[in-house]
Length: 352
Image 1 (spheres, helix red, strand yellow):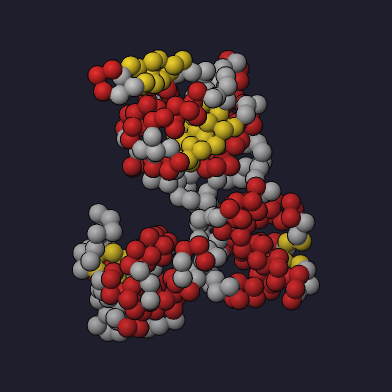
Image 2 (cartoon, rainbow, N blue to C red):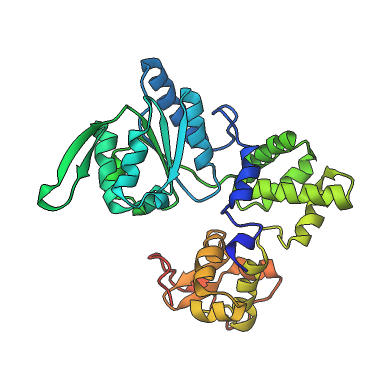
């Protein structure tokens, strides 16, 4: 199963982004959740408007699906400025960045998604552009090369990253405001679902919203995706109303359980408990048993399982935690290692 085939994946393809665009809020007052970031960003934008100047450069970091792109669009909307969008992977040469920067207008907002994946030469050019609003364009090669300074209009750069630790310190320091987006609570996701249901013309009950919100992994993108799938079930097999019964029946069809685990998540946990007595077991061995690549298990399934306290990483391998046995309805064997007895690996995914 590829990550893109999972209904609970935090990524989004072009079709998904098109569906999301109809649900995006257009102002900070419409944006649900992230209370601290909203308050801080509101002050930054209000102050910039009062001065009649472009806002400081802004960096949003956090896991996928939490609203970084939406907030970038809101920055442009609140400032009454046009938005230019690009991404780090699309800028692999300094010339690519120079072409984008030189075409900006005064006050325009430039949004760079996955900014940590930008090529190093372009990154170094961006330092000067952000601080001095100019770039040096090199013409020619070898001893005859000449650097021509190019003055840029004042603009606002909005960067988004899922890996803030990969950004060099000089780049991070040039952002006037950094907002970290955290996972949503089930109560916040209910508010997101109510708003989305209204925009989609879906009749959503409070119980239905709570059921979907509780299985959405704290991520609005997943919540909206599940809402659309439950809506489909309600229209085809139900009464057209998205209530608790419709939500449970639809998500059973799509193999999303009450914790938001899907087939891959449960396969990892069941293999760990049923085949290896709770572990410890190496990542590559676990991947072979569930029929997936080790990288898929490590990057797609494990982050959520670790965050929910269902799987532990130790120097000796992966282990099942007490909540895992309870969720699967299994009784741990008397000699089960019990991950809580082993020192968890805090250094990252380097366990065997």
